[in-house]
Length: 447
Image 1 (cartoon, rainbow, N blue to C red):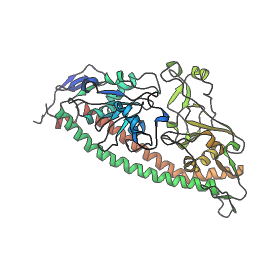
Image 2 (cartoon, helix red, strand yellow; image 1 turned 180 degrees about the horizontal axis):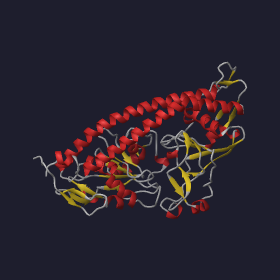
Image 3 (cartoon, rainbow, N blue to C red; image 1 turned 90 degrees about the vertical axis):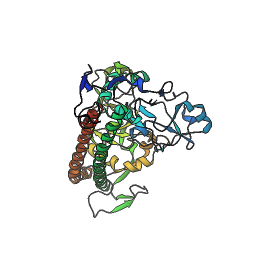
């Protein structure tokens, strides 16, 4: 029966003040299966690097959840090791939640996922018959109501994460199964339209970025004089450069090459009320960097000598992780985590040419990475990597040329990225209203 009007009740909760009268508000633990409802992945002592192989039974990690792609990754276990860790096996319709760093991202294990276990950075949830697994997944991953709770309850101010106690005690709205199905249908319909828009915009952005990259690479490796005489370099990514240019290893271009570290996760004295920029690879943007997400305290600098403050003008390169190869030119001072390599203090490179030179070589640098599960560009690889070195005056000309040629592209990229952010905000608002019984309830949900 379709209700013409839905009555609401007050919840006494600031971030979810009302829900339909016939809905419940429950702790997440009440919608999990007894005994097997929640499980944290194996600790490091149970799953060591030497246990991993290039084939066998898959090990799932945060990258699979964050990128919503369960085919990613090259970490596998032998059958014997899998049997030993079988309590951590994941099945279709299990819900995996990220618990470290990028916390609270959540995805359903798809029906076609390979047999495998989760690693130590994931929490596995199994829903009972009171809630659809997909509905619970959307609540955790997309609803503002649960995101707010996780942001308040997560231990530490940064880079710490969730634990089973926090997750089990999250408050959530619980409609009837029938209402859940109606809400899911509505969310799927609107989300499909939004996804098509986002995919179209993302493809457009990638095309613009390819054009931008082509302009930068050509200018950095060949210069802007079309009639200049060239010489061979013997280097795949830049087979020739102008005859009067040098080619040097990075260690002979920059006097300073180093990285940072991560202060103890969850220790508030290193993060709370911090004012020192602490740059992570997620901040890097293949352009100039004017701000970052995280800060650390002076106490962190005192206790961790490797947290060196890098000057404005330093170039940062992401050495591993999802953002491997990302680059930024600092327009701020700051320290970094261990995944960033800082290049600074050059006598022969201008600051802006430093950025463009590393950008031009980005794909080739990534190809130099090693490691199966998480490819890594080590500092040693970076130090011996070769770059072109034009005369100082020519560097200035190349920088001005690149700026001029990419200005329109940058504007278009920024505009498209803003449109994507606005659409994501709309989707979040739509889901928040749906899962608390607003708007779509009045026309679809039975009382």
